[in-house]
Length: 316
Length: 316
Image (cartoon, rainbow over all chains, first blue to last red):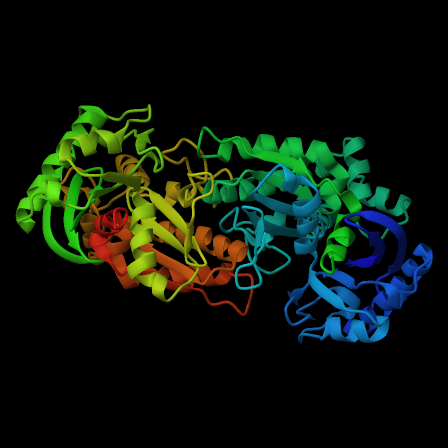
């Protein structure tokens, strides 16, 4: 039995996994809002203990703990750096694997969160149908992973920044500070900032009322879904822009790499499921150069658990 | 000794190559303007004979003939199809290698022209410094080739359509009919169409006077260079747009694949050389997501002969 940790901006999700994907325990805690990397590691250790309890196994009997983390992950070194969001943020590479291993008493491996989730799709999900694909992780940001002939292409260690594909020269400002990135149109954080800006300037929208009714302080996937269901015009416009951006970036990758298709995951991708894959497929089509190509656009099969299952595979 | 054939829209260039890159004969003929694939193959056979004469070797003593061709090349089948420009164009796959082999009496291999040129850079040029790079072939269109860890990535056989990266959603119409492709801003054909359109609507430019003075019927690389040297405003604007588009598309690829850099070739790329690589490098920089990356932007080392030398490597 192994533990897989999905470290997110708001919550830490831990699964205890047996075999390839049998979940025999789970636990969740909020991600600390301050205290930096040490606080994050301490909370992960506690959540792993909770999950091990749930599975009725002592923590030190686990084969290992795999962690999928945002930020600049150096998987070989086991470090995580450049993390502006988590627990108040930190910048220098922190010896994440070593510190966590000290607390849980078993080996730890860490990988980029999108890489871990894409690895799960490759091994257990959509990858069984698509030898070469682009994983598109649509959530707070827009992450990517490139699978070529059944293997993840990591470049010099930091491949996958699909969200920072330029889809509109001199376009909208991205949370990263650059202009015209796909994430400037499609990232949940960017969409929320845009909605807030337009709302403050007088544009009507139910988005923020729905947010308050849901007792949230940000526009979650659920809030966006509800606003679309209620035919909120601004929500439709912004989601439409998001689909345009994701489709353009994805089609450009298909044109360059001639891969078999796209796998869509992430918070928003999983929430919108097949309606999102259909919209993206339709919007990619006009940009696909080779008329004999019809790339697949599939929803990530492993859903919300994919990140933690992929993380568990790191110590498989 | 092998023959390498660079099949272009206006001319057929043949080199006789000994060893890796020693050129011991050469010949050139205009590409036929009609007659389709058969006329092209017949003219290539004559040009190979001319070049073999120049090298003082009988054609049937050549180890083989390699051809770099535009259009939809199936290297394994030896066919070329979907060719809208050459010799009046043809659409069905034509058994190019077989027909040419019948005429020259030695084995023939055919590859996509940009793939052949990128292969030469990989084996003999910039690839010695950059294990993973994007070849950007800037000419009538904008071609690409992706080299990952010292090997060309071919996808399902048609990888490399960098020119049809979307750099501006709802942007300029591309010669391919789609909107916002890099080639819509950077391809010589698209730039000429744009210049002609603006000139007809009253915008001043020396481009077409320079074209006539040079006794040309299109805006060649040389005409663009001269117009820039004479500070023609429209030429500067259009070339600046081209650099923006190439830089955005290239930076997006670096962000996604985390490769070591870019190699710039093609008619315009070779003509503008280091001034182009410097401009593109400067314009890529604001789009590069990872602050620790500084991708190289190098001019193709093999220059105008690269296409034919790469084609010769196909039968090396």
